[in-house]
Length: 548
Image (cartoon, rainbow, N blue to C red; front, side):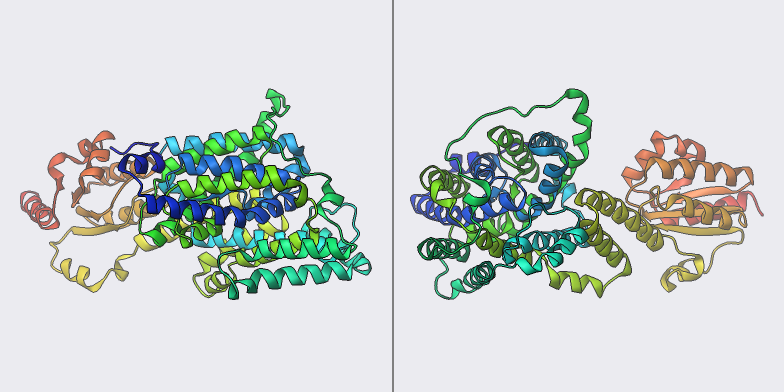
């Protein structure tokens, strides 16, 4: 039996890591650390918190996720997906509320892992993920317009429409220097890879533009003028809270946990495909949980697996968690030595980096592709997208999950329940020589609460016209308690009308559930046959014994 918590690093250290691979991992970790620097600062600023909180998160959470995680190459830290939810929590509950929500989300993630829900979270439907990811991208872009244009706005409203109303009413205060800096940042970030792939474009943009702004003394807002000094030390502190008020943080904590869990496992799956390996999903969730429990006490924000940084790690030769640990140590060194220079970064430069991030997150090609598909998928996609943009990410995820589940159940019941006139021709041929008074109904698919009522109603309708009814269950993989209850009531109703029921092709798992609920006693063990042929012979024998 697989262990629930078994970090990949410990397994790899036992088997041994070659010197060549160790050197490769160290190099990849340094590169990823440089990539993560501007992103960690930008994600923190966009989330409405001070820049050092992003750096602290990348260092502490990044180290713990690599040290304890279930993936060889996962890189953890703050991500763009959290910007919307962090900003909303800070607006509503303050910094202490964010820290409490993050700790609670970590405990939830640990519980997910211990309950072996790692594989379950991977089954979030694709339209749901694209819907809230695209919605987050739109919201991130909308939050960066102020700094991208250099608008002089004291306080931005959190609502999407109100934000754009304020932008339009203040368009006259646009700073041309900020616009040029934003455009240059975007161009450098996108096109620097044509010159070098070793140094990330966002890092080149920050160095080049920050130096240019300082030398030319260009009048634009910087991190220093907006936030003040960036501390280069760590501090350990407890958030203040009242136990009686903890319940108010359950909803944001659950949102952080679900979003973090899904994103980290998606990142791990993508990484698996790149290196032909398999991650340990439950171990990964527990590691993510521990990171989110510990990081807030150092002043950090929510963290998860970062797909872009993980891919950068793989492309630069990282193959063990040592690369992720080196990435965290690289950021720590940069924070301790160069934090005083980071305060000089122009806000317009960070806006340009985040506009590129939002474009990459938008998944517009997947969005358009889903719009051409099933109307069920379109409903989930648009509902999640619109709720994320115009209402709240928490609401979007909650309603998206429920809606996806309901539509899945509807589709399953539609697939499984077919009137006899729509049964495939080969099945009709099977039933063409049935003895008089014998009818057959086949259940196709799971017998669960979404489909149970319809199945039992159809079976009763057919059964009332028969003396003996054979229910074929060869394609029933499982039954749930709702279905068993409905099934029992249906059997009693038909038996009271003088109808004898036979079951055929019941698998061992379903038969076990039928026995637990005494349904086999109700039908009679002798009337449960392992094949349709045997059930048909049994029905013919009953007809001879009890002629109709």
